[in-house]
Image 1 (cartoon, rainbow, N blue to C red):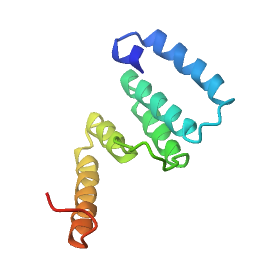
Image 2: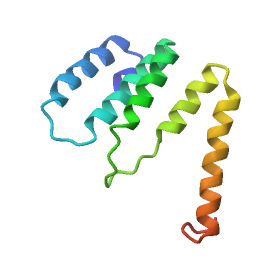
Image 3: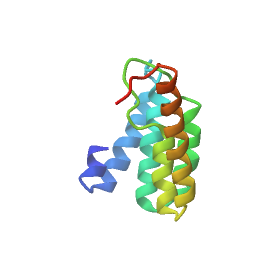
Image 4: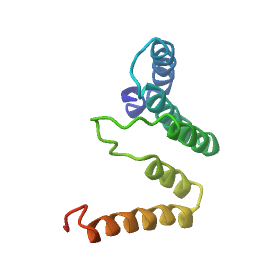
Length: 114
């Protein structure tokens, strides 16, 4: 993804394909999740927004909770794609639902108030 951020789409694609080959041999439990997220980002950059959403939906089934926090949840990534599609309402729905979950957790004392 570093190559992607540097604007080198070809190198990003080649490294992602290589990571797919190596990942099949890996014992990392969250590898399929992370690979699909990276692939979705490339599709999003290419403007293939439906494919990006499909990959993000597929990634959800491979999510494995571990010690590394998921700072970019699938819902947030999908909301970004929705905005690019002109679906601001869908994106705002995710934000609203997320806010409600946080507000509920705070009300129950699960999360501290800010």
